[in-house]
Image (cartoon, rainbow, N blue to C red; front, side):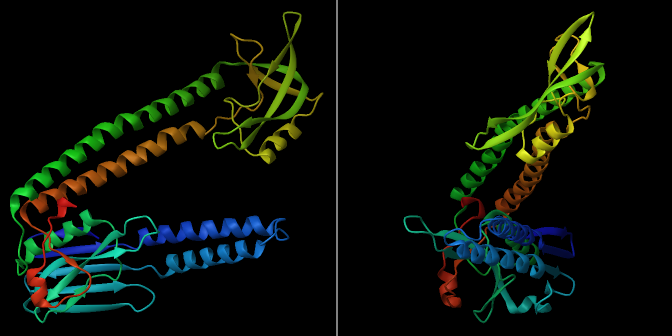
Length: 365
């Protein structure tokens, strides 16, 4: 959940469906990959039905998450002194409105997610209204581990509405926690951005290198002398394949054998490598592009590869995401410096117990 509007009269919070949908797509893709694998020549393997059941369950769950995910819109109107919570989804959509006078405070409700044996349970949170009759009304049914962003929203609500029925903790430890969190944000950017920059530089140099070869290597008429598929070991102990093509050409009355297929060396699947090897058969006449500095080095497929751009695009996208997250985190720390965020146990105690509940500063998490 994040703040989309924050002015003198309105505060609007929005929780989009795309996080849940992205998880659904991953589940469906994983399940589909399992089903594809097991139905392509592996159905007769021992316990193949287990893979079919697991793959089907992942696929159906992922599709359900993708299709049924909805969003939540919370609108706080200072003029009308009301809050409207709108659930926009295919199943059970609806809108609920509450008068500010019926609400005592806003807080985060915490519950512990069970963990595997030997691991500690993980806390997850959701924002709730604490009503004056002691009831809690959640803004959303979904608990998440994103304490900082949800706490940021609760802090903004408390500052906007003036609700402060729940006690606030002492501020000295909170101020120190905010300082540590701010330092953490700065250190993340200081360490991460140079690391990402290395990948950007490597990708850019690779792309420039292949453009230079594309423009400067000399075309010659050549005849294919060998055409086969070679193998390489990948980092995960797997095997990748590449077409290995050699060709002969004449220069200054001398016959020279050159080797090379693509502008930059690429390894991939066997089918990809075999298709290229089949295109260039022994005895075929082709145009080859030869390195003017090293006559035995060349290529026959004169196409620029997009692969080096992966080293540029992904770090840039990560940098944008980190910058956006850091900006939101800094906004969160600013709000947290002025507003404490009560964190309540998810067992649902009554109002008297709530008044005694320990409040935890957002950044102290």
